[in-house]
Length: 91
Image (cartoon, rainbow, N blue to C red; front, side, top):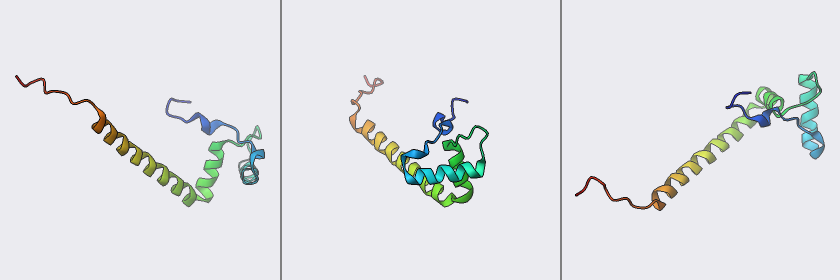
């Protein structure tokens, strides 16, 4: 795994936490038939990308918008809260 990969993608999904999660894990397991019988977050995303791309697109767009908005908020905060520095080139 390289430094740009998300380690959470390789985690096994435990189906017993909710009814919907169990349905999804069982479905993905049947579709992908993993050798070790483990369904990972990555395999769930792969199936969603193939069979329900509009769902993933909506989640990705919302995540991008939230990240962009947070970045703009952070820039404003830094601009408004950094100490005023005197211009060192003035006599």
